[in-house]
Amino acid sequence: MYKLICQSGFALLVLGILLIFQGCDSVINNDRSGSNLSESQDYLSGDQMVRPNQPRAKDWEVWALDQGENLNRIHIYDSSLEEVDVIDFPELFSAGLIGKQVILPHMIEFNSTHEYAAVASPASGNVTIIRTADRQVVDIIQTGAGAHMAAFTPDDQSIWVANIGTVTFTEITVDLDSESFAIGRELDLTTDTAWQAEFENVLGGGGGAVGLNVPAPVCHQYTADGNFAYLTLGPGAGGLVVVDIASGDPIIAKAFPRDEVKANCGVARSQDGRKMYANWGDPGDPDNPPEESGEWYVFDTASHTLLKSSSETRGIDAHGARVTPRGPWMWQVNRGTDNGIVINTRTDNIVHDLDFVGSAPDILDFSPDGKYAFISLRGPNPLTGAAHVATGITPGFSVIKTANRQKIALIQPAAPDERDRSDFHGIGVRSIFK
Image (cartoon, rainbow, N blue to C red; front, side, top):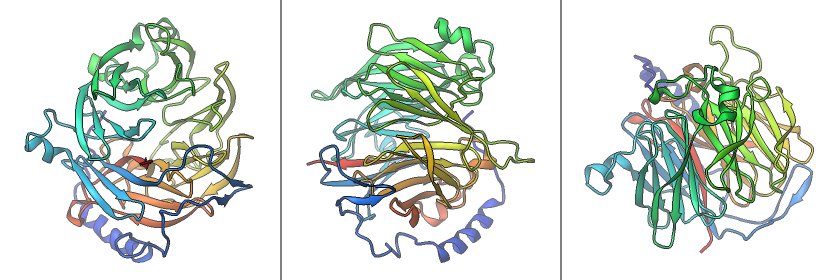
């Protein structure tokens, strides 16, 4: 599934287009639009004044993952949007500073205090644990082919990993005091009766490492109490399962078949924890593209029931989704049409359109004060996803001012001679509390 999409002769065209776009876009090395992005006052957005409901971060950083061919780096920017560090996995491996290769760093999530990051890398089938203050890799844990997403539980006692290639949901046990990490429990979805009842004979695109083509774990989010994980399935067919991870061996507590919930992409929990959101990305037919594709879903986290489904995405290939840290809004971007929507999580209605947010937007996150959104942008030779929607021309990330939903900067960390290989996917904002 993760294979290079070769597009010979495209590099020169891309460089020409980049010059055109840089002439009309605010490129971060030349223009910061006169804004100090580190300010942390309350702000007016939408229909109410947003005020903090948790301790304020003293500062923050953007960690952006370039999974491009032979790049495999994390670029770190401070709150002034100056690059302050690069974690170069091939360089670390060549120097003997890490014992395993990290290939295709795809998704990143932080623990509750943002002192550690977990980076899932599908091609190398592992999860890299990074101490964020000094950028040190403290461990690399093999979890299985297609390790797509890894996330700390709310209590920081575990990291659960969605492995597309092996159709498994794997626990890494965590002891942050001793910085100890080990493989714990594991759910093989193909042996769970709830999965078998709904997905055993469904063609889904996952499971290649074990000779299958079935709906497999893609992305997950936990209920606020950490007892359940909502796990989307794909990467093709879709579906969703709710996994009980609190009581003994992990089991599927509820399964939503793909004819009811096609979710195969992002998952996000509302601020009050009462709802979970998931979406379905549909790249459509490249020769006959639809005007709109994808769906989004709302679940009650107490009863695990579906509250709402909607096919109104206002674009093609609904993909990344994230709830803002200061208010009842979920942002969702459309990878195929470079736009998105804002959903009010109180009413579950679309309240704003996101116009052009960048070329082939994928994953997003927010500054801790909620003032800025950061959206990863794919490259001209994407290593994952359908080429006709995942191919971008400005690999890096956009900076969006949330109050008016306007793009104020484009950041392209890769050197100009590397941009034909650069391909950004995962992105996360690290809050600094100390």
